Image (tube, rainbow, N blue to C red; front, side, top):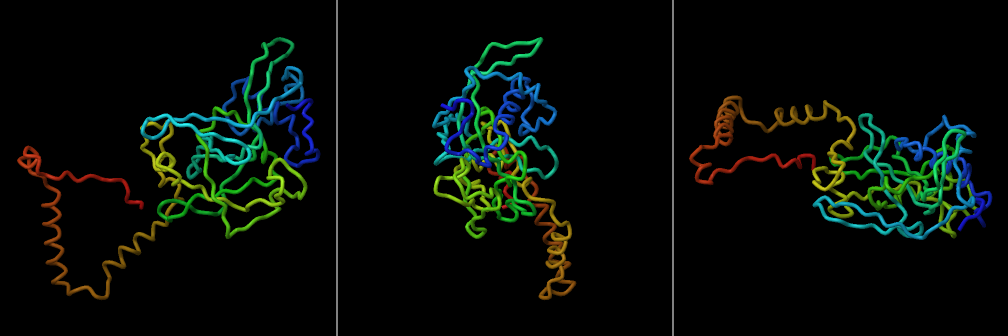
Amino acid sequence: MYTDFKFKPQDGDPAMANFVPKLKNHLLGRILKREFDGDTHEEFTDDDRNSIRLSGNKIYATRTLRVNYTTYDVRRDQDNLNPRTSSFVMVRSPETEAGAHPYWYCQILGIFHASVSYVTRTDYTTPEPMNFLWVRWLGVEPGYRAGIKRARLPKVGFVPESDAYAFGFLDPKHIIRGAHLIPDFCSGRTNDLLATTGTTAARAPDDTEDWANYYVDIFLDRDMFMRYLGGGVGHDINMDISELDDNEDPTAEEEDQHADTDHPNSDSDSDSDSDSDEDEEDSEDDGEIDEEDLEDGEGDIPEDTGFDDF
């Protein structure tokens, strides 16, 4: 239990900068039914934040969070999350511009609940229980290009503490499921993202540095893979993993085609013409399916498997 927001022994922890204003921004945004945007409510004033009342001026901490979700094959499953061992989660990204990554990722630092009321001169709500998570956000690595066509996993890293929204709060209902992030061992560890060597809630007690980057394990299980591939009938969000690829160079495919046609070991023009005629005839035959074959069940209907990007 935390009373009067006195987090000890982490007084002076940079992760706790503006803890109370951020918490009230988050709770006020939920009470006013704002759409999730990472709590970037710059228009909230001190008077607006003062309308949030916590019963007893207390918030309460719990150790675990259980997230229920529907798998790609319409089955129920559950992730058991906690700030110590299973702390990374994924939420749907509110970004809609072309090329934006479909998910946001964060690390759970604390799991809390409180009794919250909204009090103004003209409005008053009875106290209601509200659950919220204290999180540290991760962002997509700038300049890194990932996707199936490049055979590269998405790469993320902690948002630097200089960003006003590096730490914040999250409504548990926005969590899709737990995420599996793999440290990028080649990039090593750094103290630049959170410049403190003291005790901080953002790290394990014995850690003084963070991993510079993480890879998002999209192959954790079949359900996770289908969330990036798309097509999961049990998923509310279906996206094509090829969308993770940035715009391709249009000349690359043309160069490959020219390389095939101008191969130094190609035969004479007459032979190539005859071969092309035969290929055209074969392709026409292959593309035709007789009605008799369909009736007898002997014809093979060509299907686009959708895995060309692999």
